[in-house]
Image (cartoon, each protein chain N blue to C red):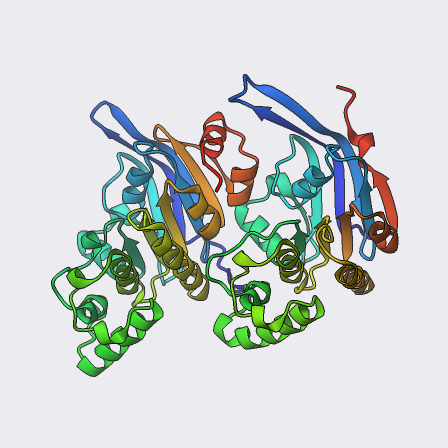
Length: 237
Length: 262
C-alpha cells in the first residue's frame, strides 16, 4: 500500500541561543511510515517527544535533519522542510488535521463558526458555502454534546472539556486524509470519550491515516492498528 | 487561496536595499507573496520593517533591488519603473494602504460617506445614489452605523476611524493591502473587534496582505506566514506558528520569549 506519510532519519534538537546555546536533543533518527486506514498510536512516558513528533509532522516544528514526506491531494509527496509556506498552508487546508489538547480561541467568533470555518476556507464563494457548512457544524456540535445555547457564543468562556470538544469538531469536520491527535480525550467524560472513539473509527473506515497520543490506555486500545514506543527514538546522549 | 492559481506571484521582491546616509535601513530583502496570502513583518522599531513596507508599496524608492507586481494583464511589472500616474492608479485601485494613525489615511473633515466613495469617484463613478449605497454597504461591513454616513471621522472614536480607513481602502476590491501597525493605537477591547473584522475581510475577499506589526499575537491571529527583521535584515521567515513555536534565530527566540503570556 502507498504510504500517506513517510519519515526518514528525522532528528529534532532545540538550540536555545539565549541560554548559552544549550542543546536539547529530543528525537533521533525517527523512521516510520503510515498508510491510509492505519491508526498508529505513539507510546512512551511523557517527555519522550511524542508531541514533538506530531508537531514535526504538522510542520509546526522544523526537523534538525531528515525527511518528512506527506502525500498531497494531487498525489505528489511533499517534503516538508523544502516546502514553501504556501505549500504548507495548502497541506494543512487539504491534507492534514491536528487536534491538540487546547483550543486557540479566536476573539468574537461563535462556536458554530469556529467549527464550520475549515469547510469554507477553500470555497470559491465563502458566503454562499457558509450555511451548508453551519448545517454540518450543528451535527458535530450535537454529536459532541455541546448544549445548543452555547453554539452562538465565542468559546473563550467555555469549560476545558467544552473547548476540547469544539477543537475536535473544528479539526475533524473536514475529512482530511491524515489526522494527528494529541490527547484528544484528556478532559472528556466517559460518554464524550466514547463518541471520540467512534469518530476516530469512522475516520479510519473512510481510509484516513491517524497518528495519536492517548493518555487513556483504553482509548488507545480501542483505536490502534499499530503501536510504536517513541522511547526508541531517544538518542543515547 | 483559490484553486484557480496563477504560476506567478502577486508580488515579487528581490534584494531590496535602502540606506539613510551611513545607516543601512534595509538590506537585501527578498520574498514572494501569492494571492490570498497574509504575511506579517515583525521586529522592533528601527528594524527596517516600515522601510520595507514603504519600498514595496512604492512610497519610497529603494537604492537597490526590484519590486514587481502582477498586473491584471497577467504580467509582472516593476513598480519603481512606473511613472507617478501609474503608481497612483495602482495605489487607489489594486492596492490599499492602512496607516497606523487613521488621520493619515482619512480626510478627517469630510463625511464618512465621502471618505469611502473617494476611490470610486477617482475611478470615474459619478452617480450619487450608487456612491451613497456603496458607502452605506461598506460602513455596515465594518460595523459602523450607516446613520453616521454624513458625519466626519473627526467625530468618531479611534476604533471607528480605523474601521472607516479599512472600508475606504477595500471599496475598490484591491488585491493587495499594506498595513502598518493597524491595531497598535487602539485599546485592547477595541483591538479584538478590529482583528476579527480584518480576519473576516481578508478571508472573504481573498486579499493578499503585508502587515507590519510588533505584536506577535496579531501576527499569530491574522498571518499565514511571517518575516522577522532585525537591523535591516530578514533574520527568519516561515509559517507563522512555526516561527513562533520553533524559532531558530537567536533574535527570534529572544522576541518570542520576551512576550508575557496572559
